[in-house]
Length: 231
Figure (tube, rainbow, N blue to C red):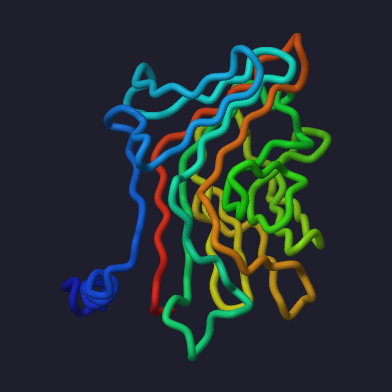
């Protein structure tokens, strides 16, 4: 069966023709300051490119002492508007996907950690207007959407966080879905009365240290952020 018969080429051509801004990051070179902002807190927080774990090309976010934080977020923002998108809008879809693993999840401050989409450049887990993966008080992965302070959190299965996994967030009309290894683990919907933000958002990774005796560390590999006009 040809690619045309599947309709895949037609969709690619349609998306390319409208010139929607997208991000594709493989960490082949240095962290580009025109694409990514690094924000460090404390005295020993760090974000560094690393290629020692082949075949992964990645960044290592480390927070090695109390009050240390390591943050990496996109310079640009994308439209996240699941309550707005519909027949009368141009954008109808936003997808963010990436690979990540934790070194010792318990060493990361669960009350602040997040990875996903945030309206604010200094967002933490308790910030408003986010759609992200978080850690609960027991170091278990959850999904979280926050709309102006009202929030919905759900469990997302039990992946072994110290292994590499592919994470994904997909937002479209009235829905934000959370994926682990390409399997949907949580769905937040407007029809269920859940809290979906409608904002312009950064791609965000935030790794804060739990305490002085611990070393919070998050590894992030390929990252993609892409909007769409067709569902």
